[in-house]
Amino acid sequence: MDLTLSDDQKAFRAVAREFLDKEVLPHRAEWDRAEAVDPAIIPKLGAIGFFGLTIPGEYGGIGGDYITYCLGMEELGRADSSVRGIVSVSMGLVGNVLLSHGSEEQKQQWLPQIATGSKLACFALTEPGAGSDPGNLATSAVPDGGDYLLSGQKVFITNATWADLCLVFARTGGPGPKGISAFLVPTGTPGFETREIKGKLGLRGQATAEMPPRTLTAATAGALGLAGAVLGTVAAYIAAIAYAWDNPLDGLSELSSVPTENLLIILIGMPLIAAAAGWLLAGREPAAIAHQPIE
Ligand SMILES: Cc1cc2nc3c(=O)[nH]c(=O)nc-3n(C[C@H](O)[C@H](O)[C@H](O)COP(=O)(O)OP(=O)(O)OC[C@H]3O[C@@H](n4cnc5c(N)ncnc54)[C@H](O)[C@@H]3O)c2cc1C
Image 1 (cartoon, protein in one colour):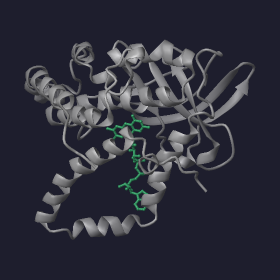
Image 2 (cartoon, rainbow, N blue to C red):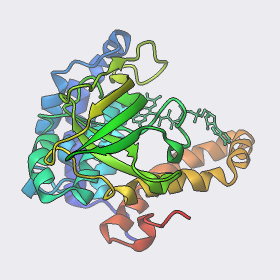
Image 3 (spheres, helix red, strand yellow):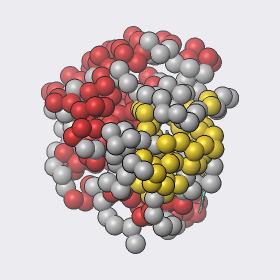
Image 4 (cartoon, protein in one colour):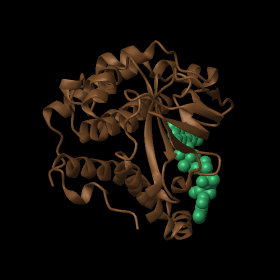
């Protein structure tokens, strides 16, 4: 495994760092106090390519690999983690799912706008009763003619009040993670409502919102599309959580007894783990992609 950065990766990191030092770092305290980053930063981030890091050129992105993605997120996080969250949710959580599971029509419709930051996306999985345990989410999706009716409540949804598009997870089947589907819902859909959550302790600059209990018509044929198809990605997310659940308290108690010097090793090791994961993904190593069925 060669973890040496390529010239392109180093060049992107240098451009990203210079831009963020100038455009984000000087404002982060002010944005934190105001509980909102300046929206004018979004098109600037788009122009540098942050929103299209892993999205191929044919869909308006810069087609970088996952190591470039990690470098971008590292630099964004160093400058202002709220800004990192805005990008990682819109592009990382929604753009990448759309890329791997969307129809060609959906990709053509949304990816070029997400990749340039001209439209923002949000990812609505968490509910009041389903955070660490999203496989038990309660929002329902019921077929209604050519549409689906989505009924439920979501919380802690990053970008929700700013977004143009929302990837909503809802139950179309039986209990557990296998019964969950995902829907692409334009935020202008009648019934789509968000209320911003204020007074957070961290990540204050990014808009985090709740979506109160509602029933909304998710989609016409063009707007809906990932029902069922995205299960693999959700399953991977849930599988990771389920794996951690095998020994949740062991993990916590082990961490609290780690000496400081070992914590430093963890901090230094984290970027290496991220780089290794990026390298494995670039080579499409099966071990890197947790598309394992949930039992
Ligand atoms: C700023 C912010 C932005 C967010 N953005 C998004 C977003 O864009 N989209 C989205 O879908 N969600 C988002 N979330 C939600 C986030 O994913 C959830 O907060 C997270 O999954 C934890 O869920 P919870 O808050 O319900 O906590 P809970 O699941 O209630 O957990 C509370 C605590 O109990 C512990 N715990 C829970 N169950 C167990 C167990 N069985 N054993 C041991 N310990 C346990 C947890 O580790 C945690 O420390 C966001 C949250 C925040 C704070």
